[in-house]
Image 1 (cartoon, rainbow, N blue to C red):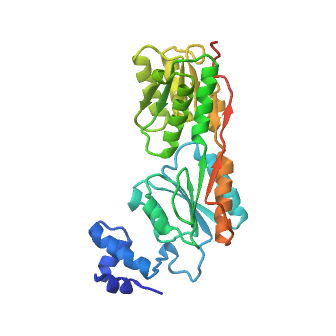
Image 2: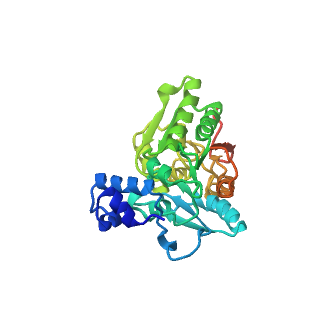
Image 3: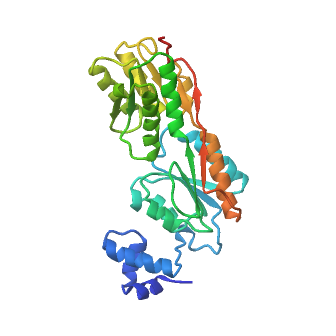
Length: 330
């Protein structure tokens, strides 16, 4: 088995420099780090990480890596993953990718501290994902794609879901429909915007779209951006939000200004989080199968660990959930 001494010899550097590189230390240059990591790959070096002192080949642990552990969206996803991992006698370890390539989450990938990973984090580069994935270390990638035989991608049909929401509003008589989103950093939110724009274009309304994007995809930013929309005047008859969290923040902003939902403005969210059916009015939204996606991700990772073949890509459907926040104005 290769050691860091072997890597140092091949790369022509000191053992301490190799150690810095393998631990993502900023003391060395990017060029030197790449040379060391290339030597490590050629020698098939694997660092055991937290399991280095254990004489076993499996940690019987699966990692769930997400951008942010907070927020109601993750509860059902985690439940789906956890029920499958526990049924297999494995533990589930959830960690945040805050910090990007220097985060602990990346170490779980690059140092193989777990037996496989489910990744819902857009700040971990495709390069790291491809370099980390191997036959005995599969990665399930959510809401993204990566070109590797050891990575399986699961996406939700976000464009079709957003299209359904916009189409509903249009059939209910709405012609001035605003869309409120955070700062788009992933394909997921691009697809949601595309669905909205495609529905408007179909009905000859593309010149009337009002797209507002900045900040985070949370309740506070939904509240702030809705207040900005109100301040501009000429209120639209309907507003679509990039997710339910933003929509709930928007409903609160309308209430603060005495604007009634849906009598004065209709509102649609996306995700169908648990809180969506309890706000007043109950939120019409696009449901994505959170529990099912988590369970599928965990099932596929065990299929790969057991040597079974899988498809490289899965797309799950969305569904319109009708509640009380949309008014027919025909």
